[in-house]
Image 1 (cartoon, rainbow over the protein chains, first blue to last red):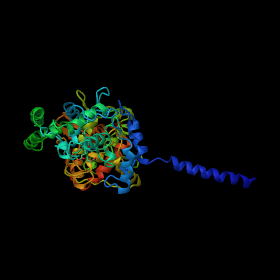
Image 2 (spheres, chains in turn red, blue):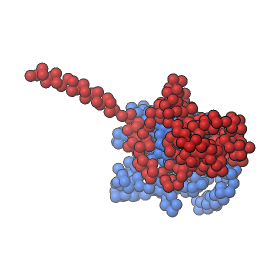
Image 3 (cartoon, chains in turn blue, cyan):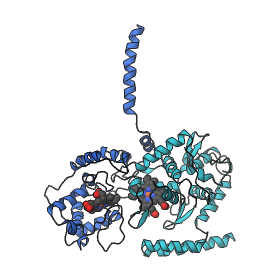
Image 4 (cartoon, chains in turn cyan, purple):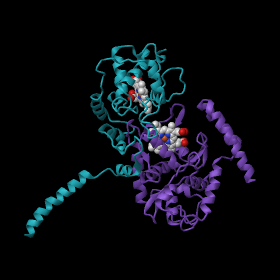
Length: 201
Length: 270
């Protein structure tokens, strides 16, 4: 009888331990979940990472080459090109989107369309001297790269999901994470790729 | 004497806000340097420091007690140098606490406030002054000129440091931002604002030892808890709860990285 109880208890203890292992949460994430409260449009699910962000957080300085490849091929599957094939919109509207930094903060009105805030990180048109340097200068982007189909597609894909071309980039995945709409991305791509855009003057 | 001093500060405050509106940011920074030099050792933050000293000494709360017996880490009632060792582990609460969460503890234990009362409205805004920011100004000013010396000897301090470090690099939200997106490279800026590399000792020292700060653009004294609250807002995260465990962990990570730096706040900033 005693022996039987032992035989039953052993696997149970084993399953219990394995279960606890699987459920054991990263202590930092547990602390974060307890330290934030949702406010406006910023809910607590914003603390949860997708597999790419979890990987990128692990390698804040240099991502190993094999992991870079994995991230890039996974994210490339998330790039969506427009059904009608139209990649270029109005660069004037694109400039406005590039200037605007509002959107997605708990202090922002969710009814107002988000901006791309490209100038926060990039130089674009020469006339705008208040630009950031987190990303490279995009001045003359189209002129230098060539006004080709290939580069237009690259510019679209890059704004949609920069991780597809450069794993763990600091640039937001504007299309993939629904920060900008397809229509807005069209305008921003025109800002980069229209020969008439001030970016290419 | 005190009155003329306050008057001088008030005059400079109006002078400071005027050029801020029109000119480019770089000019503004230069203007601030100029006014800062003109001020000598004066700074509108002194108004918060004086109010904080009054609040520290006043008998308040259901227990009608002052905060003069509050142990900020260097023994009951010791204010001088206390900020240089915070955040630290406290035996009486069995927790790691930063200045703000420790002040909350003292308001609860000594003065009899509820936790909710002690943490209500920790940041000032238009038309309302926060007692907490005044207390923070008073306590931090008493560490001016002293070296940061935050310990990690208690296991809870070590654990909190590790959590703070993880939080610093934790990317999330719709923009995939972490603190490291904006604060882990040298010589970068957002628009025209320089971003300190908080993973490097010298830059971390310079940044951490300059908070709290009187913000010219806001006309408010801002605590380090506010700095974190607002950077998380820009990071598109939910709201960081005042004095929460995560806020203390991240503060410990940044404070420890600034060890050896000379504390020089409340400062004055854009």
